[in-house]
Amino acid sequence: MAESLFPDLIHAQLDHGISKSPFQLELMGTIKQMMYVSGETAEPPVETTSIMEDIVRQQVIEMLRTCTELASRRGSKSIGINDLIFQIRHDQAKVSRLRTFLSWKDAKKNKKAKVGLPWEQSSFYPVEVPEREDEEDEDEDEMNFITLQRLRRADERTKVMTKDEYVTWSEYRQASFTYRKGKRFREWAGFGIVTDSKPSDDIVDILGFLTFEMVQVLTEIALKVKEQEDIARAQSGGDNAGSKKRKLEQGLFDPPSEGKRPIEPRHVQEAFRRFQQRPKRSRAMLNGTRLPQHAPLHII
Image 1 (cartoon, rainbow, N blue to C red):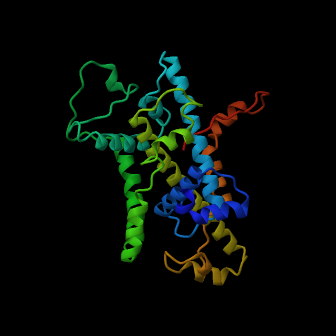
Image 2: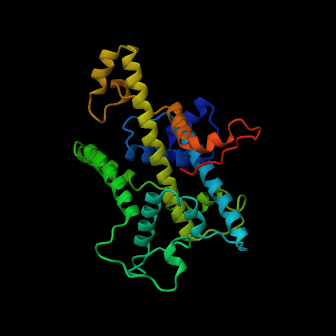
Image 3: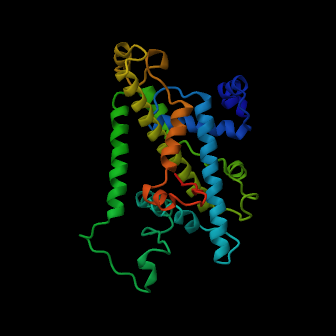
């Protein structure tokens, strides 16, 4: 099945010695679509989508491992949605986007569905304080700011698209790690190995949301890394900077042969490294000690 869907990936895997299962190859095709929606207009090499798939899988497995620990602490054998959301609680904008996603998902069941989290102050009291119309939500403002930035970039791209290009864009926006892939996704993520908990539909949906966010964030940072690399190369006069600058001024959908360089594996690796950097304050506390500086894996 994977061979009929992604023959190019099958052949590229053989050419580059990359060993992936059929489902991983399918996900690499999904990642390519997500990267396109996230701003990558060139054709990423198979090594790029391969390392992206490796990173996302590592992140999902780490999240499930932590979920199992959190569930065990409260004496439960089953992981819940709050175990997942708790791990991204410091990224309030992402939490707000996820809550909006879950609210829309439950809209048919309950018109006023609102996702509450057990560590919020409102959960400490038996009576909920009614919301004021003039009350501002900083988390929602931050979520809206990031969402508007992404919508603005999407608008800049789509307004110069042809009809066929826009149809492709719309189709790729539906790319998902989980939609109609439930059983294979659960095996890929490590359910039954990393955790014995049987995932609910909500757990799978949240992981589908988060995996898209991971690819999107990695792509956005990798594009910035590539842009900085291009600027540094132009300033140093390498690779015929004058002609390269003229080539980079081509349209959004130029193929790589006309000057559009795709995201390379090193750009993704650097994006991941930057995201995993520990704050200077926490690094300074261990300087001069003999303690091994083992940093936990940060969830993208």
